[in-house]
Length: 122
Image 1 (cartoon, rainbow, N blue to C red):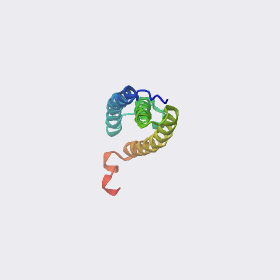
Image 2 (cartoon, rainbow, N blue to C red; image 1 turned 60 degrees about the vertical axis):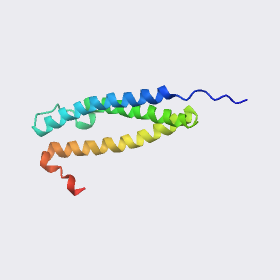
Image 3 (cartoon, rainbow, N blue to C red; image 1 turned 180 degrees about the horizontal axis):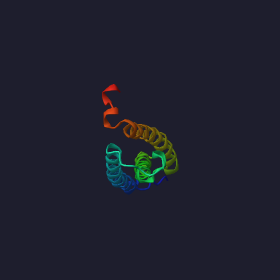
């Protein structure tokens, strides 16, 4: 007899709440960074790519989304190990794409100010 365990609803809720909480921290850090770049406040000599004040909450968002996706896949009877593998691969690829685009926008904002970002051109 096959016994199906309870789906991990708590895992889905925890992943969602972790992503939301990290997103709020990321929003605050990004607003502060954009204000500094717009007002031409001198930033530390560390490159934008290496600044942890933006990257740490971004990793929190990626981790929460990965847990959320793995839990969501587990709701559809996918084994948890397979679900985590799929969600980690998807989150890593999409997170890398978003991070690279964000860095390009921040560098563009730093070099030319807010006038250099022309969203209508895209």
